[in-house]
Image (cartoon, rainbow, N blue to C red; front, top):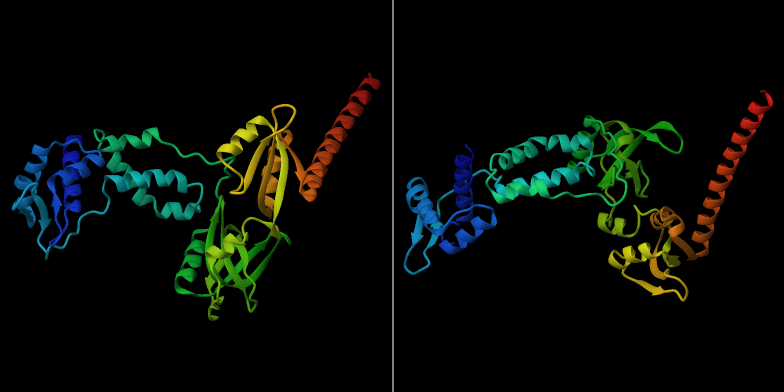
Length: 352
């Protein structure tokens, strides 16, 4: 059965590769493209496929005026071949693993038929080299990846419709700061998936400022009868580039100066924090001095805090003090717990 499917998909791939007139494709080029797609075939077998199989059932023509022969379809031929060839199936299977951590579950579920078809194609072509790729390749997130927030299917459909049709939304939204539900009229301007959370970028009511609304906190959504309001000049890419999702503390960049442990210096030498970064060995020991120009955002500060004792921040002073204050609070809590534990032991001993 696997050989039959291999042959079938080889025929389909061939038909997708051959252009309509006036286009032409030479036999050696077809052979190379088939091999790139994982099909084990020689020149003689390819010639048989073209002349004895496909040309009998399709308007397939051969320009044999000079070698190598070149193949093409009649100009009037309209192809309705399946779009899912082997490379497409491989791409979908690998994309599925990556997208599960980025897109809302409801979106991944809507793509499940295409993912299932892709898996079937690869599973049934066990002799094809590309079909083994998914067993040998994995994509892992950088750091701890949280599971995507759960989004109501009806909410997702409504938001998607509003974005596609330029419609306003009436939503019941859970405010994290106030821990209460509010009814809002949103004018969606874009949608951004950031790690495990998807955000609607929108204006509210008659206001012009752009705000972000976590999709999973929308409890209910309907298309509003109010007309949608555009935001003149708004560009989603520029909005992101300006640090809207980086939790900027100020619009300016800062110069980070820090002493870093050897393993952190090695990490940053391979994957820099920014394009403007410099590492210089310190006079004593194996630590290095890091200097980098960065956005003044919370993300960088969180990264530095995650490095713990492996990074000593020298500048900016605000970051240094915040990290130091965090360390003091951690020590204070630990000391308080230790004190309570000692008191409990002492009380237990006194009762004996």
